[in-house]
Amino acid sequence: MHNIVARGNNLFAFLSSCTMALLAAIALSSFLFTPIPTGVVDITSLKVYNVNARRYRNRKQEVALVNFNLTADLNSLFHWNTKQVFVYLEAKYENTQGANNTVVIWDRIVRRKEDAHINFTGKNKYMFRELSTSFKNVPPANFSLKYNVMPWVGLLTYGEAARTSEPIEFPPVS
Amino acid sequence: MFNEELKAFRRLGFRHVLLQILNFASVIASGLMIWKGLGLFTNSESPIVVVLSGSMEPAFYRGDLLFLTNPPNQRYNTGDITVYKIPGADIPIVHRVLETHDVPNKRKRSRSKDAVKTPQNSSLPNQLLLTKGDNNLVDDIELYQGLEWLERQHIIGKVRGFLPYVGYVTIAMNDFPQLKYALLGGLGLLALLQRE
Image (cartoon, rainbow over all chains, first blue to last red; front, side, top):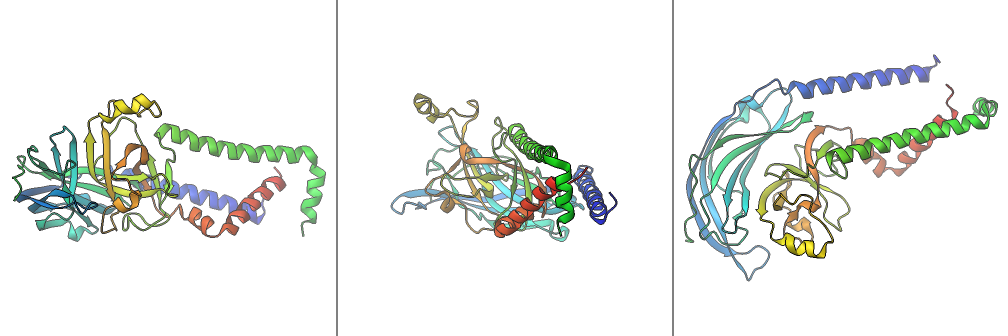
């Protein structure tokens, strides 16, 4: 009963339950912080071009080119259980067939609190295409800056930091 | 070396061995029950997965444990991290949703005619998804093996919780199968020889 194996076993069991309790406490503690990230999304221009489709070289497809200014303060998202924050700019629109679409056009991984102040000017990182291959008559799109907080341990949380005040219209093909 | 144990084994007799086998079986059975119960609760065929590749670094590394749910009446959003399995591919992939397209349920009528597969929830639109690994430069179209979009039926679940490193045990066991057998054999032997 009191041999070395039993003692080792007991010690190990005790240590692992302590670790589990500690991890659970850390995971729960991240709900004590209430983040209030702020930001501004400003779409400076939106153009539509006709390019070759990705898979089918002989087929044409329209893509949108978005230029935007982005400022965001994500400082409040960083607490002791934040491993990284994934920030992304999403375009949301309904196409002429009645399908709701959300497309991520830009993203960034923020790993340190020092980098949490985002100031970005540029164009979309990922191709912005339409399911029906054409943006003709597509209603205006809303752009919003969203984030995903990824913890060291525990639950992933999502939120929105900024959005455009009014929808942006798709111009005709240039 | 094992004389002592063998002697004890003889003294305890056949019934004891049976009892220990029963104990061992009940441990395995309850493990299986918890796993399957969790699967039922989360509506996911595998509610806990181990990250096998580095395509989501620096968020998830090899050996991290992910907890999934797959609620049937919820749509997937951009930024969600999904675990999906393309038919024909042997391992599930953990990647983030880049595009969602909620196509109104038009295709469903033709599908119900065949009556092969009923959709999980008819109130939900048919979602077409595109995913990308955070650490990859391009999206996943090449991984879809000819499919244009990922659909709901390919998705195992959405990542909700994260626990680092713990899953490395299973990776080690896959990389060194001897370890697996040694562990299983050791456990089995221990269960048989244990005296209470």
